[in-house]
Picture 1 (spheres, rainbow, N blue to C red):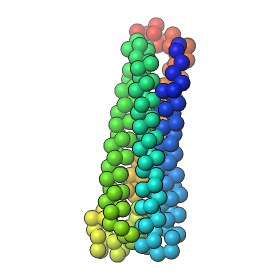
Picture 2: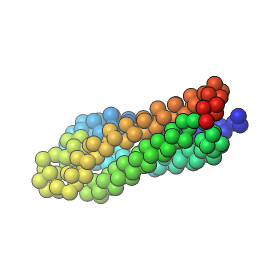
Picture 3: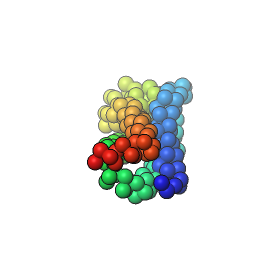
Picture 4: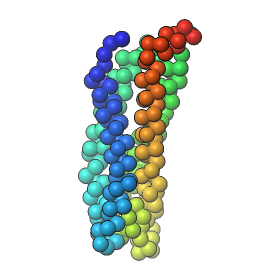
Length: 182
């Protein structure tokens, strides 16, 4: 079996940063922003943190996608011949598309909140009563972000699990069993 260290590294590091960064921001940044002192400061701190994370996240996602394509190319014969690999690859592609869609939509919502300035917020993603009354559109975006902040790590965590399964499929005994079953 040929080595594909560069594509595997890009795949794994990109995915781990995408997963870990969004999870850390959901767990820590949004909650910590609530300690900024005022509802307006909370919104500014959360926006600043997410805005700083966005280019890193984009690079991580790009690295993951380049690595994924490299891995798929390197394993195209196994995908075609080994039982179960095509199904795993299809599932992984669908979950990746869902994670990309959720991330893109989250960014659109985040830009909407950030563009509104220091809108009052109870935490990074929970609008204050003032925001709900004065800026219903921004409050709605914050409420959607409150859900998406957990959806994205759930989807990318699922990708980590699928990738682990894919690695197990590359064991010589699994390859031999998968090829004899076709």
